Length: 236
Image (tube, rainbow, N blue to C red; front, side, top):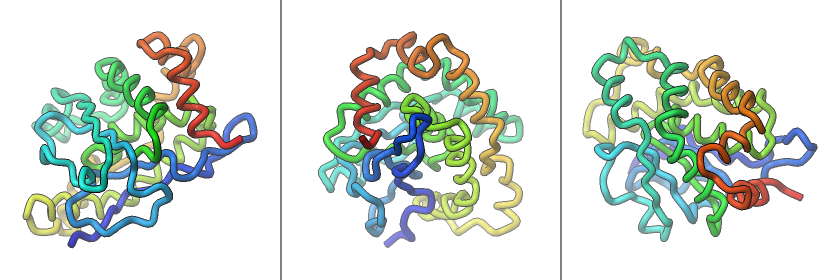
């Protein structure tokens, strides 16, 4: 039995700029689930659809949530960039990485919105640790639905406090000893979720002609696909 998700949460109850709220049990985010995880206390669990953003060589081919009947969609993002980051982690610049993700994984981000809008139930978005690829994808999903910038940034920053628990779960999944406090301190720059990194993403989306919706349309989404997502996530 594992210790359970360290960075899992339901993104319901967030305010929008037009005075509404996001629905509970529609959009969930986390690090990669592991076989044997206890059932988390999250509305909508188990998710009907899982959007797994890990690269082609990350994780096991059999997703653990398949046994719960979830539709699992693998949408690899930034394989080459993540490999480079693993080779030279000290050179990792999250702000630049996220902007590169917007450029190189635009098709995948459109697919995230498309699948989230057509899901028959709760959607779980995750990558390996639930911070970077998940953070950018969730920021887009929330912002196009009208969740204010400050609220999107606050959700992204919230992840940093959970990262030591996530890294311990990663070590467990690989059969390695738990990292020491000294090792965690040495990895601090990899575990950070600084506000300026996601602010750069929001600047690109908000400054695009038509805002986040316009960005999605320019990269292949349709009005109907965006509207379906917005209708799903927002309460009346």
